Picture (cartoon, helix red, strand yellow):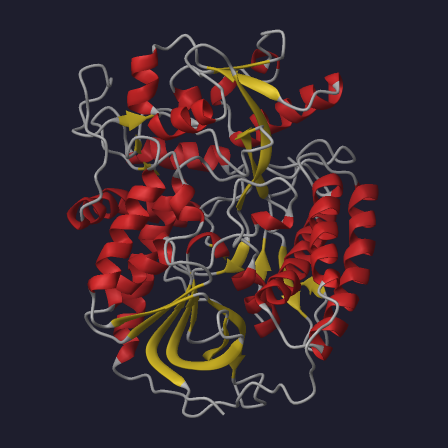
Length: 543
């Protein structure tokens, strides 16, 4: 028997979305923040590009809205896009006030903003405010320092949420979220957290794929937990593959920012031949799905392991000033980007679908919110435009905070919740099952559910995931849980949701490209792929 943790607010995840929300609520509430690793270790820390916002008088809200809608290929919610874009200036202001040190404008910046602005794929103007090429790090470390100083914020590092506790699961009427079971990773002990409101801010699911730009923690935990609790999940077929991840045996998941292409870097083959002009008139600044597919096609056509990104026309001084992190990482690996091209490959980068929410971040379950990459807000549609993701984190953190603040005074604590039941499990002597299944999922997802898909490949993947899920479920029921097992269980759920969603879309749109259905259904209105859980079993069915 363990003491139960009780907080007004339980935030699962410690990236830009989770920490922003914690800061916005902490003056009025007692807040707990869970982090699987050290507090700052997550996708935000590694975000290079920046935050998109209209900050130059030659730019406009309307232009940012239209660019986002075009990238989203007919599936964006126009009201949500406008809502987010209109909140961008205020969000940047808030980050500046917190102390985020964005790069200031210089004489050749090409804008009249006090900040230097990059241009990235899909954007018609320079509107990416950044801190050199380590924007995520600047935002995350600033938020972390503020959060650590606040007396009402309680940090639980190295804790992973296992499952949400809901009235439905306790056979009580309605479906309200009451808290979560949480594994203290260091002590391998499951704790009970109860809260008036629970917020999923746990990021995406890039680790479902063999090659990803995401850090190790991006295993789709929030999406899987929300699914098991009864939330609708939307548009999981739209996995964004970043076109340019560094290709080097020593460079695990290191991103080469799109901002290089914004400054004129060219994609070339091994012999130096550029190729993007054959695929899109926007060339290197086409949306990410177009660029990733072009690279994938060229690699397969030629049997090459990578292509190259060449910015050697820029001076060493320019590169050092604008891309210090990337430049140093390349130099450490023996690549001088001022003199030679950088080897790159596409890698799974961003989960455009997720837990369905409204403009306040509310899910289908009362008292449960989802913000950031874990959610499907309607902003990204079938393809996220560069640098709209960090913006979404800040805007929806603010929106969710407003909504939660209104209900805090009247909402009640759920009372004592059932303890975690370990009475029928034993310690495993077969950990190899976990590592083997983890590896197998990531490999077949890459091979069968990657940048270019076919119905036959998707069906193969579906067959594999059904077998693996039953194996994992049996293992989960028999043995004491560990962080690796929790993540594997979640990855299997997310992989199944991605495969099922991809099979349902009988067209190619945005990030989902099928050679069996190579064009979009232009006669029909674009529709979201919405999956809803059966009450009897965890199989996806149409909503």
